[in-house]
Amino acid sequence: ADRLAGWLLAPLSPAQFEEEVRERRPLHISRSADRAYHRGWFGSEELRQLLRDGDLKYTDGLDVTRYTVEGGRATLNGEGAATAEEVLAAFEGGCSVRLSWPQRHSDTVWGLLASLEEHFGCGAGCNVYYTPAGSQGFAPHYDDVDVFILQVEGEKRWTLHAPPAPEHVLPRDPSPDFAPADLGPPLASVALKPGDLLYLPRGTVHQAFTPAGGAASLHLTVSISRRHTWRDLLELGLAGALEEAAAADVTWRRALPREYESFMGVLHSDRADARRAQFSQMAHGLLQRLVASMPLDAVADQFAGRGWMYDRMPPHATPDDARRLARAGAELAGGGRGAGGAVGGRLRSAVAPPAASAVVGGIGRPAPVDEGPISGLHARALDVHLARTVRQRALGVRDAVRGRVPLGQVRVRREPAHPPGRKLCGDEVRGLLGAGEGA
Image 1 (spheres, rainbow, N blue to C red):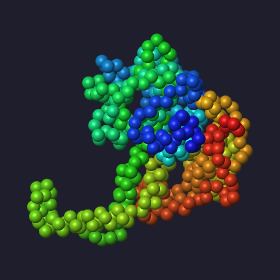
Image 2 (cartoon, one colour):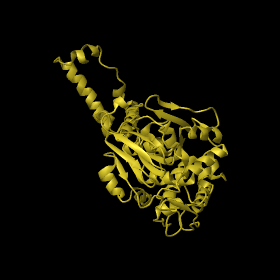
Image 3 (cartoon, rainbow, N blue to C red):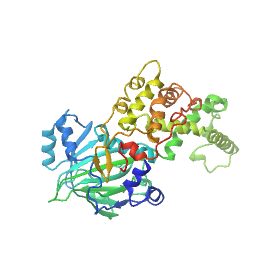
Image 4 (cartoon, rainbow, N blue to C red):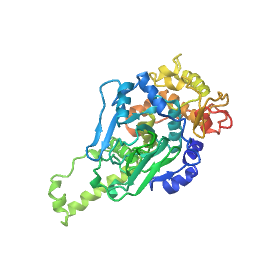
């Protein structure tokens, strides 16, 4: 995972990115010496093939949009299945096509996101944007996620603006569309060409168009850090700790002082009243006890489960590791049930061997199956996605997430990430993508 992150961010190291760039400023990496750097992840032919196969539906995975200064943004979706004839006709007419969740259809994108999830420790998402020459699909706006834009085909020109106000720096929610009059002077103008990468912290206002007279543009927008902040962790922890404290100590359940509204509130804020001091002392004392008693380990486990592990796709597995995961899943599930059945079929895509592929300079090629030990990522995948189904792990966390048990009563027994004595493969990227030696 770290190796793939280093490849994505090169020439910056992941450590430089964390210390100097992440959540601080946009970053443009130009790769004029290697315009094929991102080729092999997902391209226009893969999108067209999905349309021909009839696998896509409007709104649920695919949108057809167009933006003009005069008319604003328009979403021009049809009904039901998105046919190749209809979507490509709209594309030729100047509309942009957005494919959401391409990882559902592409093993390479699935592998990319799984690796980035391990590196950044949070959920990752992806959209594909396919825009004809001379067109723009979306109005200026900012997102609630940090994004890496991987330019695969054609050229796209981006205009960036700083967050409109301090409270929009690293926002929790996305913005509405902005009108041109709402925007201040540009922060930067960037022309992305194949192989280039653009990083935007959440809150960066952006818009992009494909210049006329050239080729159509296709890029991947990979996102991280959605609601993965201190605020989100502690919001969950405080709610759970409050519920537990109220159950354990009757003080929390006692009635407020009679007629407290006669001495508390803004109307009485400048009064010298002993009852005010007593009220404040009581409230602050309870809050201090609450914070001091918060079970941070349980909160962290619950946050990880609720925040992204529970809803994410299973980690991408190489064909060889997929077979090992299937065998281990059957053993963990017990009672003769297979891994897929143990979790209601959610692991079927993990244990079904995907097509082996490698990424060398961004170019996909077949690769031999690795017969070595389970890599670190897939050992953890076994821990999260299979051992999680053991009652002492999965059901406890899941019940806490759904509010069935108090937060502090969750006691997760950690299953070993790999059998004792088994060596872990150090080449995380090769193990993730199924590449052979020298990838």
